[in-house]
Structures are given as C-alpha cells and as structure tokens.
Image (tube, rainbow, N blue to C red):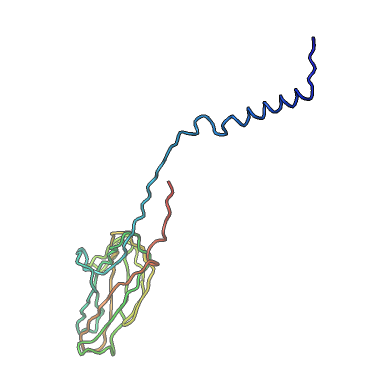
Length: 190
C-alpha cells in the first residue's frame, strides 16, 4: 500500500527538518577548544660611530691631533679609522681644523687622505699592502669620503702634507657619522 504525502504532512515534515537543523550547533565539535600561540620579537638599537687613532691602538674615541714640523719636504702620518659602531660603515665626515704655531690658519697646507683598502700602510717603506684609495684633501673644513669598514674593523689611512713656510702647525681631525653613513636597515621575518 502506497501512502500519499498530503500537504499537511509535507508542511509538518519540512517544519521538523527546519527545527532539527536549527538545533545543531553551528560550530564544529572541537570549537570549544582554544589554542593560544605567542611569538616574541625583539628589535635591537645599534650604535654608530668612528674615530681616528694611532695604528694598532684602541684609545677612547676623541679627535685625532697630527703635529707637523717646520719642513719643506712632504710629511706623512699614519692612522687607523676605527668603526666603533654596530654596523658596516659606508661613509663619514672628517672635520679638519689646522692652525699654525702662532694660532692662525694662514698658509696651512691641505692634508691628503689616502686609505689602504684590504691591507695596511707599512710606515717604514711607505707602501700599502692593499689598494690605495684617495679619500680627498682639505686644510680646514670637512671632507666626506665614501668608505667601506666592517663593524668593529679598521681602515688604514695615510695623511700627507707639503709645507712651504717656516713654521710648525697642527691639525685636529674629528670623525662625524650619522645614520646615513652606515649600511641600510634590514628587516628579518621568521
């Protein structure tokens, strides 16, 4: 015997299915379980700085003073540019103040700055074991060469002057750096 579905039965059946569907929770069975995950990130604040010092020494950062004697010949001075910062140095500004024994700036010679890239200056033989790079020259004012000095490393530098007057003089050289003198910042994702 076949039963025929009447309109009332159909409505009752549809209503029963709708009630059953609304009674089923919308969340999966494990939705009540919570999991927490935490990551910690740290950002380091790096310092930067550089200064000149006598070769092989590591004094406290301070301006370098080169004293020149009365002489008509070329005079040389050797020093190290020390990168005391936490990043690679790509530039710097050398502030140079040169005065005669009498305290004036008249007739003072320009100082030529040359680095020995990839090596060091041999003071006895006046030779570079790497590649000589001219950084520029200046008597009073500033010089802003492009450099490449790894963090904590040194760059061997030679100063040379030719003085023609009959007086001694001294040059005070300070190294100034700012954020643009160091390698670009990096972002690390993990």
